[in-house]
Image 1 (cartoon, rainbow, N blue to C red):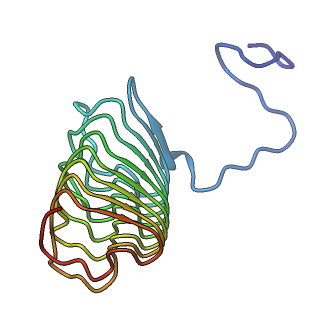
Image 2 (image 1 turned 45 degrees about the vertical axis):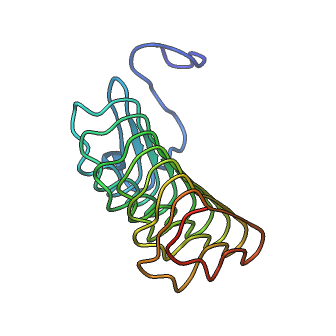
Length: 173
């Protein structure tokens, strides 16, 4: 577009005045189907991965070939490499998660949740220390099913409310 042309336009952009870009152009990448924004984010993403949105410093760092993820937040889903169909929003949300089809929303929500599919984890530090997390769980509320559980796992559990299920260990339903 020509100087002074209005957005949207095609072609080259000419900017007069100020333009501030933090983190450099290397912090933003896009291809046909992925959008990556943030220093160190999506570092392992290969060209065969499709339809991922990864935003945040070191977010989605370990994801290689997996698809259909929305990961937003500093170190969200940072270390998992086998992650499909995951939504993680928040600082360290699902940080160590390495499975499929789960939702993590909140600061440290499921931060150490490493395995198990089809989970919903919403809240500050909710299910934050469930290394062998389990599948088909719903944990909603500040520290629900969280803190101090270590290797505890379990399937088909529901914990709603602040600290609900905080003492939950292995088990189902």
